[in-house]
Length: 129
Image (cartoon, rainbow, N blue to C red):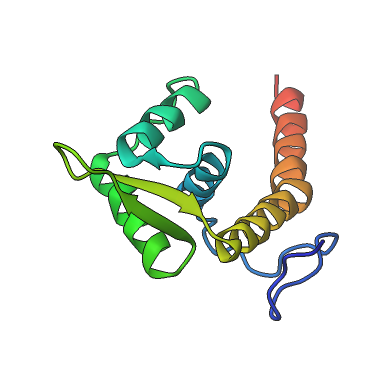
């Protein structure tokens, strides 16, 4: 199933532009998909665990993106009752589609830009030794 937008190329076609890939968005949508009903705090912990502690996002970064995801209809929230008013998150069908688009874009970048770049740089770095 292809998740491309009308203005995007196919997965096998190199990207024509290199706009920033929304990595935080991809992380959050993936982790919400894998662990529905997680709170923002739990999602921050899961990002640290997923990256082996190499990525630790600031609270403001995570909660700002979660608000944007909700505003864009990519996730839904439920407020937990009890002491603190915690929100839990679930991905919507639109969120799944958006995640598919992001994943395809990341794969194109790996195939057509990042892998060839690493290979070329490594080759030239080894020649200079």
